[in-house]
Amino acid sequence: MAQEHRTIDRFTAARNELLDLVLQRSGDERVRSAIRRVPRHEFVPPELVADAYKNVALPIGDGQTISQPLIVQLKTITLQVCSSDRMLEIGVGPGTRLRFFL
Image (cartoon, rainbow, N blue to C red; front, side, top):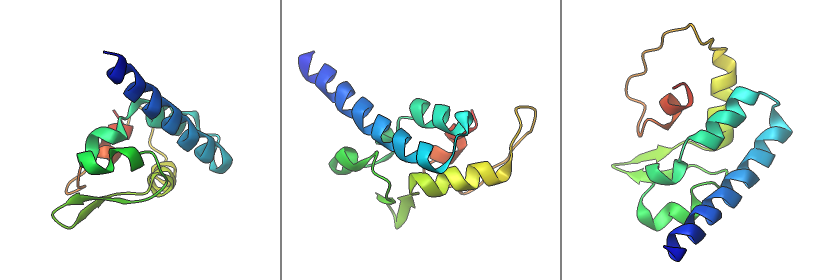
């Protein structure tokens, strides 16, 4: 149980560092909220979990990558999605961007 608590703390600290970086680029609360909510570490292979909240693209297998968080942020803001909008996203890899809109 203690090990699990330390792991959660490690992800929280890493996620907060990523949030600080995002804040430098955008004040959009919806993007910050999505970064807080989306467990990026669940979308990467176990050997890359320690790097999950770094601002880099990470390989996820089969020649695919999980996108760099700031790129996801820029694409998300550019879409100017409203809560009443409907989206269909096809072929997006691991689906982390889609989780931003849920």
